[in-house]
Length: 224
Ligand code: 0O2
Image (tube, rainbow, N blue to C red; front, side):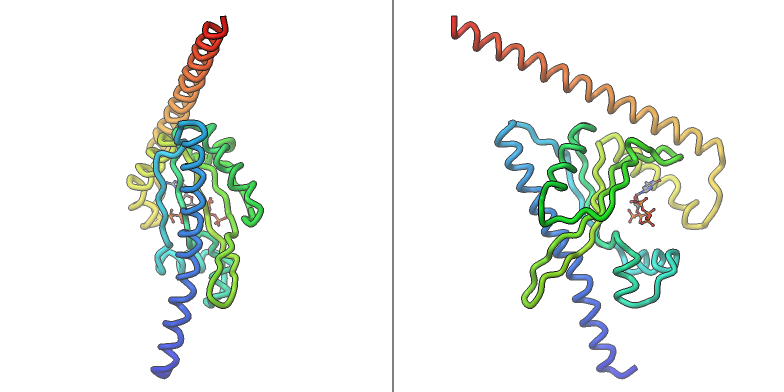
């Protein structure tokens, strides 16, 4: 490889990764617009927090090998769909579907696939809604459709997933089997988190109903 080859490769790599960064920026802006408008219309913000990340080169290569793709930009693009990832943490389970519907209704976003680990949790208890979405990114000389993964979950689902990741990271890294008893406990913890979500959703709905009744009564007494 000549110095020029290396320079060209570095240039291409930077350009490649930049498109994913732009896709994240684009999606973050769209989410911010939805939240601001939603807040204005309903005096309510369905999002607790968002976090975006670009996959590290090590994780990209690991996933590429796992998938059996060839080591080229096309190989990576075709096999590693979550180079750009946006995680949105919502307050309530119903907010997850409201938000995902709002994204699906944007005509220039193309939904490639959807995995609903809320309706169908993973055997370990993991819950989240995963959308693979193609985002149009307009650049100086072209428009690219860039694929990214949007994970939408509640605070309880996020709490479980972050701690599960922390606890089992070492086992996963070392390809070690996790003891059965720990897996069972982990699943129990996920069930507790799901129950908590159900309870919070119920409270949220009841409080909304009480408020609606109170404002109806106030309107009635004004009309009388
Ligand atoms: P990181 O660090 O978040 O990047 P695929 O081959 O793409 O179809 P994959 O990659 O398993 O299959 O996709 P899936 O099922 O949609 O899950 C991908 C991401 O979801 C993971 O990314 C995690 O972020 C999250 N996830 C899935 N299962 C679990 C789980 O059991 N525990 C936790 N904590 N997170 C999970 P990465 O690349 O593994 O990690």
